[in-house]
Length: 252
Image (cartoon, rainbow, N blue to C red; front, side, top):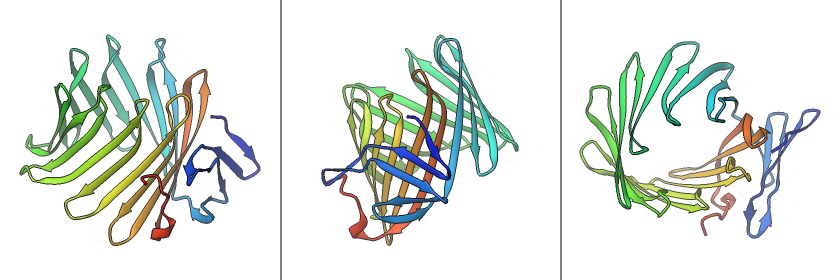
């Protein structure tokens, strides 16, 4: 997606639909975004640059957020990502990945605060993901079902005492998650909708949290490509309380 800048005006071209109509242009001006006739302040802007190895695998990323820059370096073995080194101004962390028959079975996040381990289990159309605290005890886990392409389409989250905390249903099109609906046991629900460009990279994320207030989150992305590889990404974040009649009807 190419970036067009006219003075202080940035136009991000997106394709989305509401009630059959295209919503194809998002305007960021004077740190505000106009969305459905309402102007919202941009809460944050995140920028990421990418470098690649000779196999076109991501070798390095540089992230700029809130005036702070951090770097990640990626290392591979037999084309599988085995280590990620995350360097920020305040600390350096490592993430290690382990595989069985090409499928990730363990992820270990190593920091000065301790190790956080995530384990992945596979059974035909089922998946289980278990998260551990730094003391080695189970923090929480997810169990769910996948479609024929391995996409998780329905899962339940449990706390360390095996008590259900939430239930989530995801909808995929061409292996890209388009919609997600999640409800917690306390009655709070979350609905999400996503759009992508022709390379399968996210261009638009619309999330709504239903609780005492209705809270809307908007993410807008713009990309610079070299061939089909991202060299630069910029994400704008908007967050605001909205009224029920302002909710887009992506889940009807």
